Image (cartoon, rainbow, N blue to C red; front, side):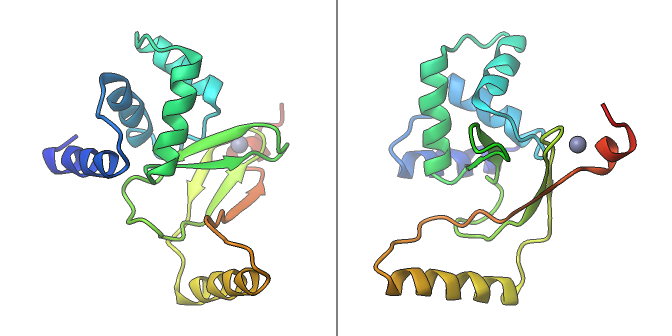
Length: 156
Ligand SMILES: [Zn+2]
Protein backbone atom coordinates (compact mmCIF):
# COMPACT_ATOMS: atom_id res chain seq x y z
CA UNK A 1 0.00 0.00 0.00
CA UNK A 2 1.73 3.22 -1.06
CA UNK A 3 1.63 6.63 0.57
CA UNK A 4 -0.51 8.34 -2.05
CA UNK A 5 -3.15 5.61 -1.81
CA UNK A 6 -3.25 6.02 1.94
CA UNK A 7 -3.45 9.80 1.77
CA UNK A 8 -6.23 9.51 -0.83
CA UNK A 9 -8.23 7.33 1.57
CA UNK A 10 -7.50 9.61 4.49
CA UNK A 11 -8.74 12.58 2.53
CA UNK A 12 -11.98 10.86 1.47
CA UNK A 13 -12.59 9.82 5.08
CA UNK A 14 -11.80 13.26 6.37
CA UNK A 15 -14.19 14.92 3.92
CA UNK A 16 -16.92 12.67 5.29
CA UNK A 17 -16.03 13.44 8.89
CA UNK A 18 -14.50 10.00 9.52
CA UNK A 19 -11.25 9.37 11.34
CA UNK A 20 -8.66 6.96 9.98
CA UNK A 21 -8.67 4.53 12.89
CA UNK A 22 -6.83 1.21 13.11
CA UNK A 23 -10.13 -0.61 12.51
CA UNK A 24 -10.89 1.53 9.47
CA UNK A 25 -7.45 0.81 8.10
CA UNK A 26 -7.85 -2.95 8.61
CA UNK A 27 -11.20 -2.96 6.84
CA UNK A 28 -9.91 -0.91 3.90
CA UNK A 29 -6.82 -3.12 3.56
CA UNK A 30 -9.00 -6.25 3.44
CA UNK A 31 -11.11 -4.84 0.63
CA UNK A 32 -8.27 -3.20 -1.31
CA UNK A 33 -6.19 -6.38 -1.32
CA UNK A 34 -9.07 -8.45 -2.70
CA UNK A 35 -11.12 -6.25 -5.06
CA UNK A 36 -13.36 -9.16 -6.17
CA UNK A 37 -14.50 -9.80 -2.62
CA UNK A 38 -18.20 -9.14 -2.08
CA UNK A 39 -18.78 -10.02 1.57
CA UNK A 40 -21.72 -9.54 3.87
CA UNK A 41 -21.25 -7.75 7.19
CA UNK A 42 -20.87 -11.12 8.97
CA UNK A 43 -18.19 -12.26 6.50
CA UNK A 44 -16.18 -9.07 7.04
CA UNK A 45 -16.44 -9.63 10.79
CA UNK A 46 -15.18 -13.22 10.41
CA UNK A 47 -12.21 -12.19 8.32
CA UNK A 48 -11.26 -9.39 10.69
CA UNK A 49 -11.35 -11.82 13.59
CA UNK A 50 -9.15 -14.24 11.60
CA UNK A 51 -6.66 -11.39 11.24
CA UNK A 52 -6.78 -10.77 14.98
CA UNK A 53 -8.65 -7.46 14.69
CA UNK A 54 -10.89 -6.96 17.66
CA UNK A 55 -14.05 -5.13 16.62
CA UNK A 56 -17.65 -5.66 17.63
CA UNK A 57 -20.56 -6.23 15.27
CA UNK A 58 -22.24 -2.90 15.83
CA UNK A 59 -19.06 -0.86 15.37
CA UNK A 60 -18.27 -2.74 12.18
CA UNK A 61 -21.79 -2.31 10.89
CA UNK A 62 -21.58 1.45 11.39
CA UNK A 63 -18.11 1.59 9.87
CA UNK A 64 -19.16 -0.32 6.71
CA UNK A 65 -22.13 1.99 6.25
CA UNK A 66 -19.95 5.06 6.62
CA UNK A 67 -17.34 3.74 4.20
CA UNK A 68 -20.15 3.13 1.73
CA UNK A 69 -21.48 6.65 2.32
CA UNK A 70 -18.11 8.22 1.56
CA UNK A 71 -17.67 6.19 -1.62
CA UNK A 72 -14.84 3.83 -0.68
CA UNK A 73 -17.17 0.84 -0.49
CA UNK A 74 -20.31 0.17 -2.39
CA UNK A 75 -23.33 -1.44 -0.73
CA UNK A 76 -25.92 -3.54 -2.52
CA UNK A 77 -28.58 -6.11 -1.65
CA UNK A 78 -27.70 -9.65 -2.71
CA UNK A 79 -29.92 -11.80 -4.94
CA UNK A 80 -32.15 -12.84 -2.03
CA UNK A 81 -32.67 -9.16 -1.20
CA UNK A 82 -32.17 -9.96 2.49
CA UNK A 83 -28.43 -9.46 2.93
CA UNK A 84 -26.36 -6.35 2.27
CA UNK A 85 -23.06 -7.00 0.56
CA UNK A 86 -20.14 -4.63 0.31
CA UNK A 87 -17.57 -4.20 -2.43
CA UNK A 88 -14.45 -2.15 -2.93
CA UNK A 89 -14.69 0.87 -5.23
CA UNK A 90 -12.09 3.08 -3.53
CA UNK A 91 -9.83 3.28 -6.56
CA UNK A 92 -12.43 4.89 -8.76
CA UNK A 93 -13.40 8.55 -8.82
CA UNK A 94 -16.70 9.31 -7.11
CA UNK A 95 -19.69 8.97 -9.41
CA UNK A 96 -18.10 6.38 -11.71
CA UNK A 97 -20.58 3.90 -13.07
CA UNK A 98 -19.03 0.53 -12.30
CA UNK A 99 -20.88 -2.39 -13.81
CA UNK A 100 -20.05 -5.81 -12.49
CA UNK A 101 -21.11 -9.40 -12.43
CA UNK A 102 -22.08 -11.16 -9.21
CA UNK A 103 -22.12 -14.93 -8.90
CA UNK A 104 -25.23 -15.77 -6.88
CA UNK A 105 -23.66 -19.04 -5.71
CA UNK A 106 -20.29 -17.89 -4.30
CA UNK A 107 -20.83 -14.09 -4.30
CA UNK A 108 -17.60 -13.33 -6.10
CA UNK A 109 -17.75 -10.02 -7.91
CA UNK A 110 -16.21 -9.52 -11.31
CA UNK A 111 -15.61 -5.89 -12.19
CA UNK A 112 -16.37 -4.99 -15.77
CA UNK A 113 -14.93 -2.08 -17.73
CA UNK A 114 -16.19 1.25 -16.39
CA UNK A 115 -19.32 2.18 -18.29
CA UNK A 116 -18.89 3.78 -21.67
CA UNK A 117 -20.65 6.94 -22.78
CA UNK A 118 -23.79 5.07 -23.97
CA UNK A 119 -24.35 3.43 -20.58
CA UNK A 120 -23.83 6.73 -18.76
CA UNK A 121 -26.30 8.34 -21.12
CA UNK A 122 -28.84 5.64 -20.31
CA UNK A 123 -28.29 6.14 -16.59
CA UNK A 124 -28.77 9.88 -16.99
CA UNK A 125 -32.00 9.33 -18.92
CA UNK A 126 -33.36 7.14 -16.11
CA UNK A 127 -32.31 9.65 -13.48
CA UNK A 128 -33.99 12.46 -15.41
CA UNK A 129 -37.17 10.40 -15.64
CA UNK A 130 -37.11 9.92 -11.87
CA UNK A 131 -36.44 13.61 -11.29
CA UNK A 132 -39.45 14.44 -13.47
CA UNK A 133 -41.57 12.32 -11.13
CA UNK A 134 -40.14 14.20 -8.16
CA UNK A 135 -37.86 11.39 -6.98
CA UNK A 136 -34.25 11.95 -6.07
CA UNK A 137 -31.89 9.28 -7.41
CA UNK A 138 -28.74 8.89 -5.37
CA UNK A 139 -26.98 5.74 -6.37
CA UNK A 140 -26.98 3.48 -9.38
CA UNK A 141 -26.23 -0.18 -8.84
CA UNK A 142 -25.35 -1.89 -12.08
CA UNK A 143 -25.00 -5.60 -11.34
CA UNK A 144 -25.52 -8.57 -13.61
CA UNK A 145 -26.39 -11.70 -11.62
CA UNK A 146 -25.68 -15.28 -12.58
CA UNK A 147 -23.34 -18.20 -12.03
CA UNK A 148 -19.58 -17.75 -12.38
CA UNK A 149 -17.40 -20.06 -14.48
CA UNK A 150 -16.00 -21.74 -11.37
CA UNK A 151 -19.42 -22.53 -9.88
CA UNK A 152 -20.87 -23.57 -13.25
CA UNK A 153 -18.19 -26.24 -13.70
CA UNK A 154 -18.39 -27.60 -10.15
CA UNK A 155 -22.02 -27.78 -9.02
CA UNK A 156 -22.41 -28.14 -5.23
ZN1 LIG B 1 -19.42 -18.59 -8.21
